[in-house]
Image (cartoon, rainbow, N blue to C red):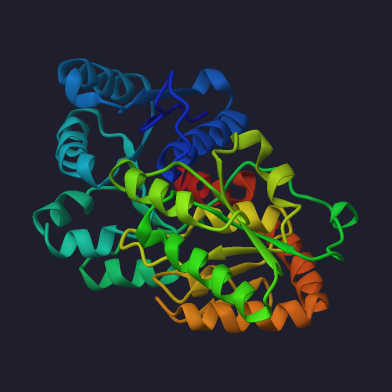
Length: 347
């Protein structure tokens, strides 16, 4: 039986809903389901700089007490944990795995090539998309596999899909509230679309944690926006599907440089909610154009307006995509995703 140690951003005692924290917790829960709670240990890297020696002691403990170590650091922690884990493993000889969160690693390693030698000591580096794997292989890493992003979500049944017969149609965004996530493009597209019709054919609700550096600017935007543009706060993880199922389309016009396999897509698929997304980073590998959503040019508000105009006249096509989203959601359950990791542990 494997005993697994997981080192990642759990943020114990805090209600953080960012992708790194959610994925770390979800992976841990999935491995606990598979191996049993008693066989999975964890180390929380949240605010580790405040107590670096305590973190070192905990990392030493998981190497001593487990057979397999899994790390999920962000970019700030990678320079610390790669050399630390390689050093510890010279003594303990454990299997080591790195589960990458987001799409930033290939570009990061181009500017931090000293880490490549350390990463070659890991048994496997799991990334979220095929194109990301190819980029890492081009940098000389041959220990790379694809493990798609995943979330523990209640997947809506097709019979539970509400109808969208009455206008205005409800739109939403569901990501960190940051300019680079395309929030302003989404707002402007809805305002301009409604102005074309001279009435409210769409509303827009914005969900998510507001980035601290963007907070004042965003508050000013909301204060001056029409009443059909609203900020609705953060949604508890357990209520994601119940919240999103009532929307017509999700807008995701991101151009955020760290975008990976966006967890927003998984939330939407499980909720039967098609996604209008930009052709940015890995979106086109996750969202199939005209099947689970639409893929549009980056920073092109007019293309969003064109799509909104089209689906205002053809809402039946959205209903077909909603069913496709639910079918797709089953590919990204935690139990399916960790089979790839477990197989590597057993090999």
